[in-house]
Image (cartoon, rainbow, N blue to C red; front, top):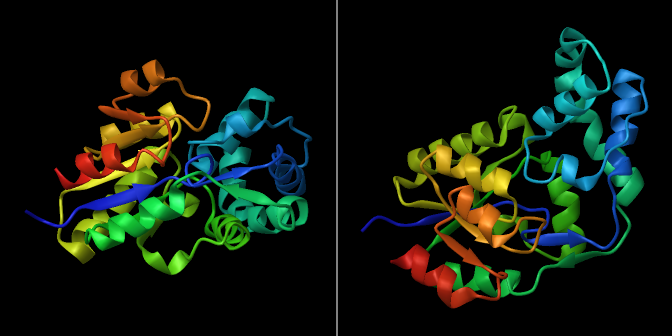
Length: 225
């Protein structure tokens, strides 16, 4: 049996903000595009950041070509905006996250990241949460594609090329990320630490749904077969 790979989303899956920090995206949008757009965490959690920004701006009446022209620039701006707004605030590691990562490593399971957030934002989150980025052997971030499906596909392609495996799972806390994973033939494991209900997770394609990362036995049983 080939080695398994587990790709984690980040926000509300491994870490959770203690307060709504979505003002960072409002700041970045205003700096690149000009208008003030109201943003909530749910507008980008579980989505590719480019897709989320495009959706927000089109809903506010901006021209599609204008939106597209600024997407690469705003990806570079977002880590700075995030650092300014949230970079020094406390952030929580979700219960069982570090223990699960250790158990997966002991079981020779490779772990990676597949997240719609930019790399700089994830690095800041992980540093504040005390999670070692060095343990993730495969990573795909917001610049890997517009949608979460693009991002999961990029991580899966890298994992197959570098680790030679087709046994891949995601651990996600949003129905959107679960659906994206399923579309890439990567089996989603849903954790109910975000906004999604168990029913929404199962409708999105998660065959296994757990209350949190503390449910290690169920997750390990799924991954290890």
